[in-house]
Image 1: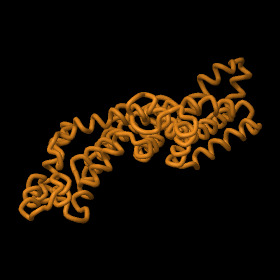
Image 2 (image 1 turned 90 degrees about the horizontal axis):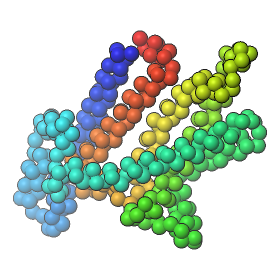
Image 3 (image 1 turned 90 degrees about the vertical axis):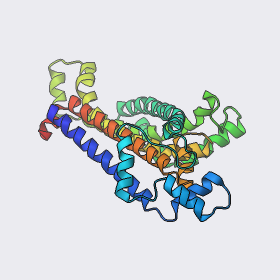
Image 4 (image 1 turned 60 degrees about the vertical axis):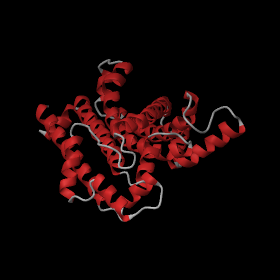
Length: 312
């Protein structure tokens, strides 16, 4: 187990380093003159060549690629994301402020997704092939096919415009987060419902379960000790993928509902060529992905020790 965990940690470090290098290289070789874009975002006035050259030096764009990358990587290992090329302020306070809006929204959407999918999948598997099962699959398939931006606009039209029950724009009160969280959560629920349903049905079809019933093991014990662990492995995989869906959908949802957060933070940074801000968001996202996948890999080995045995 320790050797497997060390291998997982090594792979995580390699992925993080590769992500940091690739991100830096893409931004460094982006078309146009980043110094001019930064100067225009900073001063918003007629620019001279002297001003652009000064900005280029201040932003470190006059150095070679590897020198600039190593100068950025060193502080990054201490989670120091540097200073904004446009405002000159440290990146971390602005980034943490954006995270304060995005992470609670993502958590609320995940809770909604799990809260809807678990009972729906359980009801669907009570009678496989029945009308409730077919209806659940149809609803889940439809939910997966609906884009987040279309669903968000539909919810705004119904609950904010026609019914006037909920606010549509901003993030001033907890009520402002209901429609965005539901928009993302229903998409998560659609994917999880199908996977949980398939996992439960597959686990119930295990050949050793009839032998357990003949030995007098109760249905509750079989479901808790055998069906649930087998069904949880594919669900964990999808939960890791749903994190990607959430982070991707948050950019659109925050734009639709006019919310501050990592999405608007990233878009503003890209438009202004604020490289430290863009790099901070990408590295933070990669760190979240790697951490979640590492936790899922460890959970795999707890639920099914054979996975760790195959690695060994």
